[in-house]
Length: 90
Image (cartoon, rainbow, N blue to C red; front, side):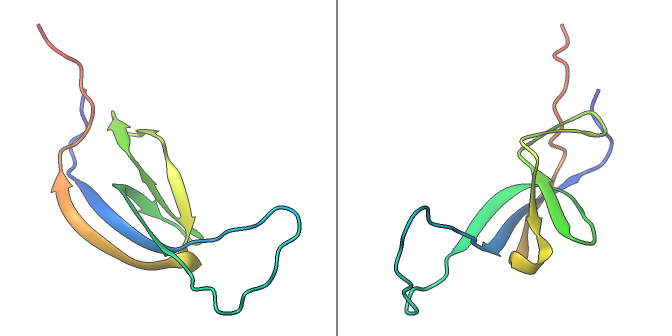
């Protein structure tokens, strides 16, 4: 059974967070990295943008991720697709 809606496929550009283990030097000239993640837009709430790489049924997602809204630089719509998983019929 597939859901009846068309899903937004998005590219999310977001400021990377990182950490180092042990001792490290501070380098004020180090440039930040903008990461780009692509997936099925699920929703945006007060704190996060939720997305996934797989969808089946009405509410099940595979490899669901969330990015804090304060880290997001931009969201680019790539497509609207009927991209749900479905049962193979004989």
